[in-house]
Amino acid sequence: MEQAEEILDMAKAESLEISDKEDILTPKELEEKTRDAVFEDALTFESSGTSGEPKRIPYATENLEKQKIHEKKAFQIGGMTEEDVVMTLGAPLNSISGWASRSGSRKLGAEVLNRSFNDYRNVIKSRENKDVTAIFATPLVAKAIGEEIEEEFENPENIFPGMSKGFMFGDLLPENLKQDLKNQWGFNQLRSLYGTVEADVIAIEDETGKLAPMIDRLVIEILPYENGEKKQEPVDIREIEDETKGSILISDPEREKIELTRYEIGDIIRVYPGDPVPRIEVLGREDNTINLGGAPLYENELHKALVDTYGSRVTDWKALVSRENSKPALDLFVIGQIQEEKENFLENLFERAPPVKEAYSDVGSGIIDHIDIHVRHDEEEIRSEISSEKIENDVKSDRIIFGKSF
Image (cartoon, rainbow, N blue to C red):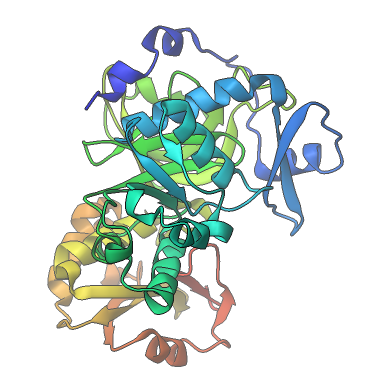
């Protein structure tokens, strides 16, 4: 399999640049610029906006071929070949996921059998299911449609005997869900794809287990976090010398119809230095960041600490963030056949998130009220315990819940 460094145009990556004077572009600002605009000669996609109205993102018709090449390279880095036969469970237009999964796959030379999750049954009814080797989907859509197929036909692994590759986008892919999907669909290879409607594919998981960023099309920077504080000076991920967390900024210098420069998506990533191609890991949404006495804690750090402690015995979890006696508190409700093992969990958590260890070591001085583990049998039991009166805002991830007191 070719490496990202061999597939990406490194000469072009070196030539991409943006002005140091460019301001940060927020989702709200981009939404306001595109809401009522008329885009001629463009394919316009939509996604959820900050105001409740769809965010409209145009791609110039004359540049769609470049976009397809961009997607082709990403899928190639992820392990797709021209021999693959693809079934997409992406969303139909006006979403980008169905279009991008089809266009990039075909550009690579792979065969695509359908258009979106709306017509996957046609693949089965036309008896082409035995030819399918790869699918695109969000993790939860893949799981839900797998359950539909099992109920209506039989086990997806039997329906799609040639299935070997899964490309998952749109959400974090925790290890337990990854294993569930492998068991359900029969994947040999399951890769995470990181993208947005604004920038298309940003990065894709390669054989390193981390995300290879598409630096020959996008300039990717971060606003680094230092001592729990977000700095306002952007840093190109190619210039980072040590593992660093930060809020990701995306720029597409070749973009037409809209200017996409230093667009702050709202995701926190960790950058792993590399020459010429660094790798990244998505830690979670910035608005899901748990602030424990000034120590930031991210969803993916919590999840990995749970996996480090309990392995695949954890089937799901939720975190309730509250304030007890004016101090931040974290209650983790874990579903699985496990013992509490709080001290072991804390040790793993502190290894994943060292700033939390510093804050927690001062519990007696009033930095954090508590970090507790609660083992439960199922999600219904958790819901009954975390009553709706406690919840002020269930943000984008349904695993992190901020209580009214917080």
